[in-house]
Length: 393
Image 1 (cartoon, helix red, strand yellow):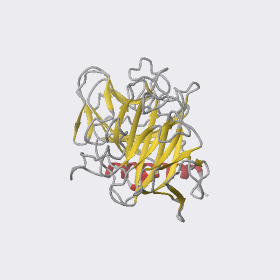
Image 2 (cartoon, rainbow, N blue to C red):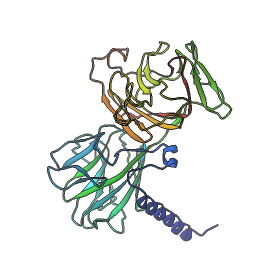
Image 3 (tube, rainbow, N blue to C red):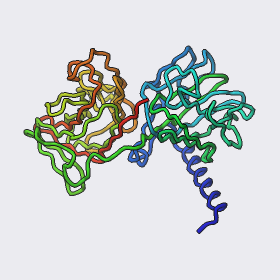
Image 4 (cartoon, one colour):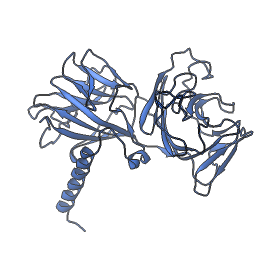
């Protein structure tokens, strides 16, 4: 067994090597292993899709990075809220830059000791240098990393426990006695130029919805023409239709993740959520259809995988038939967002009047999940179905 000092050095060395590897790889991409582990990109490297500014500032995408240098102090924040997660982001800050990454924040926070966690990026002379949580706890950072080169912040938030590393070195371990349950992710303009890239997040706390052995936890009373079976490799196969497989449990605000394969070209299916229990296809539908209207992936056919059927088409097709792909659905109140292969393709808020049936209006209360057997050509498989409910704020 290693002595404690040697073990500590080894841990720091491994973290440093991991960080170096991350910085050396292609920016704004996820590896196959990261996708399998549930990571999603909050920034696609090309656009501000999924982000919103709360002030007039010159946020733009330059060379695969979100950059800002002037304007009114404020945040560029996600449109989606998250609860427990791991977050990694590269940043490049100049010597006098004072910026930060806001966690579980309001769109316009007013007090970092109360309504957000402000993970600071600031010089050594600042009362809260890089890696600190402003108004909560100062980091033990050796160097604040405001030297105009790329550095990596990694943060893990589980309920009130927040752990931060900078370039693989632990710099903060904080527990909030009154934790915030959910909130937005924000990038701050305060003083000086700042750039961000490789902004990726992994939801924590997901639990399996499918055991790989049988249909425990699911109801097939309305399978009708569909056939649902568990294959020898532990995947859930769905053929034929019309029909549905419905979860026994109900969910309101959640993060759902799964892997899917379409066994033929341009098959049509969907994942329904907040469904009326026992009813047929009565929920919000996250489409599965990898067809394109042309060779252009930005021209999805029939809403496109990740689109919310009849509400918002996917902005691009990022999955292919005959190959496994990953899907993440986040439902948070009236706001819904969907990622396919780690890329956000949908960002929609239901502004309709409340209604028990999501086909007719806004449904906020819990409902079941449904896997859709669309028609006689249906032939899809699912694996690694998992979900976590998002804690109240």
